[in-house]
Structures are given as C-alpha cells and as structure tokens.
Image (cartoon, rainbow, N blue to C red; front, side):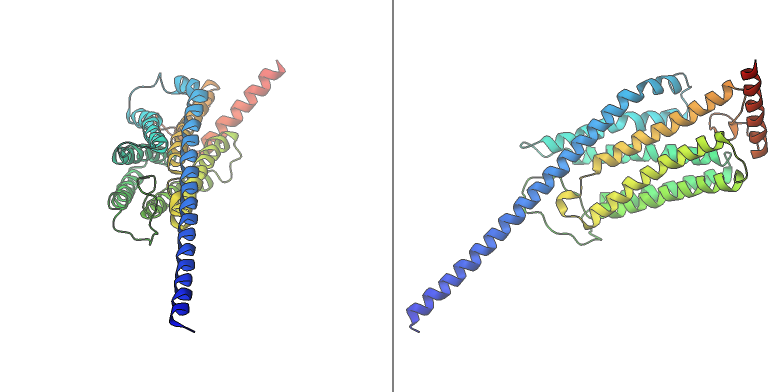
Length: 318
C-alpha cells in the first residue's frame, strides 16, 4: 500500500471515530435534557398538589387549630404548614427559569430543611404523646432528633465531599441537580422516621394488644399509616438520588417537602378530630392527646368505650 493511500485510510478511520464520539455525546446530552425536564415538571406538579391539599383541608385547619392556644405544637404546625409554600415556590421558580441569574438554591435549601424539621417535629410530639409524655422518652427523642439534624445538615452543607461517586453533568447553567450525598441525607431521615414508627407501633401493640377498640384503631392506625407514607417517599428519594441518572436527583425534592407537610398536618387534624369526637361522647382519650395532661390506662379506655357503646344502644332503643 502506498503512503498516500495509507494516510487516506487513517484519516478516514479517525473521522469515523470522531463522528461516533460526537453522536454519542449529543445522544447523552439529549438524555440529560430530557431527564431534567421530567424532574422539573415533577417538582411543579408537587407544588400543585400542595396548593390543592391546602384548599381541601383549610376547613379542617380552621376547625381544629385556629381556636387552640399558641403553644409549641401550634407554632411547629404553622411552620410545617405554610413554610413549604415558600420552599416549593422557590423550587418551581428554579424549574421554570430559562435564563438570568442563578436560582436562590441556598435559600431554597434552608427553607426545605426548616420545613422538613418542623414536620418531623410534629411526629416527635405525636410519639412523645403516645408514650404518656414520659420525661425519659422526651430526652431520648430530643437527643436523637438533634443528632439526626446535625448529621443530615452536615451532609447537605458540604456537597463537595462526595461520599457517593457521581457522574458530571454536560449541560451548562442548569443548576437543577443535587449532590449524590442527598441519598445519605434521605437515608438518615428515613432511619429517624422508622424509629418514630417503631416506637408508635410498639406502644400500640404492647399496651393495647388485647383491647378491641375502634378508638385505638382509629388514632394509632391512622397515625401509623401516614407515617408509613412519609417513610415511603423518603426511601424513594434515597433510591433515586443514589442510582438514577444525575438529572433525576431533584425529581422528588418538592414532593418530599409536600408529603411531609400534607401528612404531618393530617396527622394533627386526625388526632384532634378524634379527640373532640370522643370528648363529645364522654369518652376520654387523654392518654394519647398531647394538649391534655391527664392520662388513662388501657383498661379505662376499654371501659369508657364499652360505656359509650351501651349509651348509644340505649339511645337507639329510645
């Protein structure tokens, strides 16, 4: 083969390889753009869910919280109820922004953290109430909560120290992706929520295992169901942030915030409505309602419910 012919073949092979690399690069670029679009639309949809839920539960909020005194529980409730609107709005703004200065990610992260901490605070108050406001349990819950917050915030504040290997985005100026460390943050949060659920379940089945009570089923069962849903979205975020492509890392960011706010509020509405309904029928559940200080034993709850059923039967006969 002549030198000229060899040079022509080599140049042709080099050109083919270069074209293949360019096509591959643009293919993955298009995939990342599609991933980011899905992530952005999901966050905007989650913001819409928050607004819709607020509209359909505003009556419950007025009924069960507005007439209550401004204690610690109500302050935490207001933060977890209304601050997510700011956090979700900032995320929606970042999703819709196509040009201009970078989105306020720091302020967005701070609002998200405070909102989730407030929602988790409601779970802590519920758990403490289920344990008859035990001082030892309060110390344990507060200590564990502080350790969890410090660990989670540390992971979130120092994203440059990657504990999970990550790929690099090829889309400049997007800023709608998070560090892989977010998976560890959500894992810490999921562990905390599982502990809260386990403590509630233990109290339910250890103290009321042999009691057939619709009151106990309603109060404990409803709270445990809502807590399970919160854990489900947290675990989903762990999986998405750990193994999904980088464009999906913020896909359920707003939904995490919304679920905590929505279900945390519903837990409070559910328990307060149950308490007021039982109070109206002369049946006390003060052993598991945090606003009251007096507590009853499981046997008393069963006796009270039996009396309530007998009184209802007598009324129906009349």
